[in-house]
Image (cartoon, rainbow, N blue to C red; front, side, top):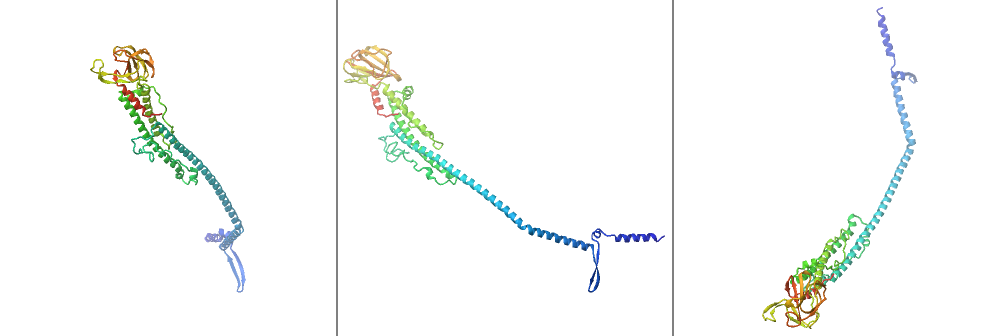
Length: 442
């Protein structure tokens, strides 16, 4: 009884040791008898050996299959890759062709834009040439006003744009007509522009030309303004010698001078800058307009004409003399004209008759009020042909020469008074001659 448990445990242990493993169950141990020259041998193939052989066989089979597939399909894959590369090359070539077409179209467009640009530049060039032509008109304008004529006191040509053969002339020959652009820009710049700077060069040329022309015109018109100012100063000086304020006379005048602005020079572009020229042209117009107004007022509205068309002589002048009756020094406030009895007497300027009748020592007297505080008197008349309040013009006959009042013989006693103060009539006649010598045209 005591030996049975021990035997059972030994049997169980033996059976457990004999139980095969997983590898043993898959690959059972194999035994072979091999007969050879030396006899019969027992060869046992273990499970691990079978598994190793199977693994090596599987690797060989996989490598064989891979090599077979690779060998069979390699050429086809290369052909497919070549076709794909060829398709990519064709697509790139097509894209390059499209880009070239776009570049060619853009180049053609740029070429068209360059031609259009040069056409605009040539249009500005034509404007410049028209500016040169307007300068010729400006020359004629200044010549007609007399501002361009040389003066005797000018020994050398004036500084500025004048030079060469003018000798004192404000506008010497050729000073305004040179500088025209002969070659069109489409010919001069026929090659395509390669940069923005090259495209800008035609406009830069025009800007420089226009700036030079503007500078020349400004200098020219500055001289013209100076010449016009000299003439106006001479006219004003004549008025001041008469005791008249030329500024007040011009302001109260109703005379509208002719337009003397000359050619209109518009602003061609931002590059032309013509405003300084226009200002100077307007300045010349204003100066010559005032001078012309004063000249017109002097010659047409002031008593600068003679009151008689025909007379023998001036028998007594203005100033101090020996009185013909008392034979003492006395002021003679007018001028005496000796003429035939009954000779016509005329108004030397427009005005209004303020007195027409007997006036003591004046005899038959006519007074005429003119502009600017001037008054004329006509004494010793034999007959008066106007009445008080009558408006007369230059050349209106106002009476006939006589010997009435304080007089020693038939004559006309003629007076000019400024604000009641006697003035020498010869001053007015000299002023008429002086102002007539000043050429002012518009």
